[in-house]
Length: 71
Length: 455
Image (tube, rainbow over all chains, first blue to last red; front, top):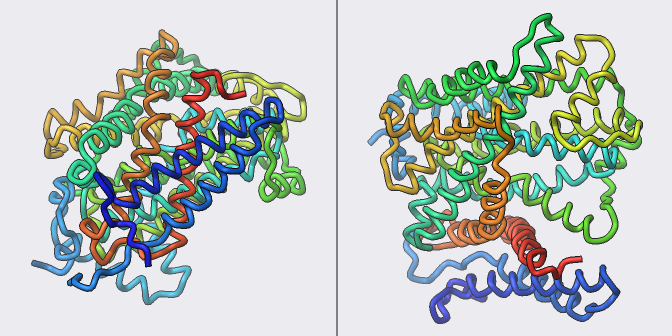
């Protein structure tokens, strides 16, 4: 199972995932602005929604127990 | 260490005033309630709950009610679904806060400072998200509260202009605020009871007004369960803003600290969850439903769309018929700013102490001054709301609320913080992430609007 608490650089994977979700949200809204205004930027809207959905589905995975955990 | 004390990892200073035998007795009562039949258990929880009602009273303020009245007057019943969807999403995060309080036993700003830095904890959560909001938004409560008293009193046969009645508003709210934490914890229970009474007044008074004007139940049910938004960009704006406004940083912060102030521990988690549903969620939905319905049945039918809460109330009152119905409307409406001022002021004092690392002592001058800081809002009696300040705070809030949401989500899932009590539920995490995504949307739209990118 994916361990989102694993550190990659300064932050954990979960933090990177939240940042990726934010980027996906921004892409989706930028695309939506174009679609609402003049029917353009459909690809950006779709990509943004896909990134958002993927991030939400992955980030919702709870942190697994570690073998050396002694709760 | 006694049983109850062992349930709370760190005692919050306000809770230290509560005698240990009182905390132990409450835990025993909760244990007893678990074995009772459902109606008795609900009644017991209703009596023991409190922070959730405080949150409802705080959230149901001048801004929320104005938005609800405008939605009813402009769109009729059609936007009613938005209230429970928005508040429903917020409940996931509130459950996380209940976990921090009851099982973590920690004050959230301290943990944020430790793991995510003081910019996220002390600055974004305590100062910007709570203190600045309490001070700034109390101008609106004063403006509405004093106006309502001025409008109500002629119906009772005397004049009480706002240039004078603000003294009564300040006296009443200050007395309630300063009662919190007094007399070995009984002060907190007293203020919580006052908040419950305030919400009951809103429900009864607005409810009677609704009976007077009537409800179109088929349209109301359609509005409650069939989503609808105004078409185009404004519809999306409205959805995101309403969703984010239902529950925000101040609510999360306040529920954590108010629970700690009650001495809540591990065995209080079921009570905390009950308090979120029956103290916050249901009263919020009911009050919004009733108020929106009153305006949908009156001003919407007439096509009248005033812009402010004062104008909305003034336009509605002649449509309520006999004198007693307008009186009830004004009394119910008056409970809105009063309870919000009280809740925000206590939150302000807690947040200022958390941000500065001060030990909260409700008998100290520092606590009293912190709690009375939002009373500066009395200036609104003579001057309009400080629009520039509201714009600045609104900008900070739009850009920081989502970061605070990220921080809470990370704490809930952090092995170092909650150990075995961290979130183990995929659906719980997903619910919180949906709310975070909405808060992200608010921040992004704010930037897009400034850049001229949003239609």
